[in-house]
Image (cartoon, rainbow, N blue to C red):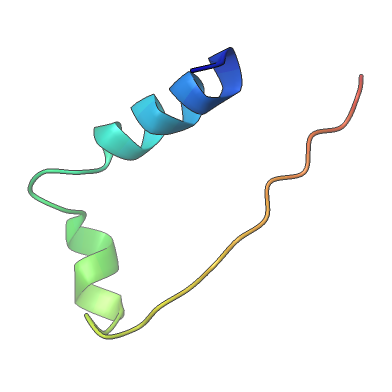
Length: 42
């Protein structure tokens, strides 16, 4: 596993568990989403 994969895995793990009370209060459980990660050279 490369470094980027590990960082993403750790970030997602941080939000797992009991869930996020704010997100759960405003979004439907059936809602699905997707995203794109864009890395820019600095």
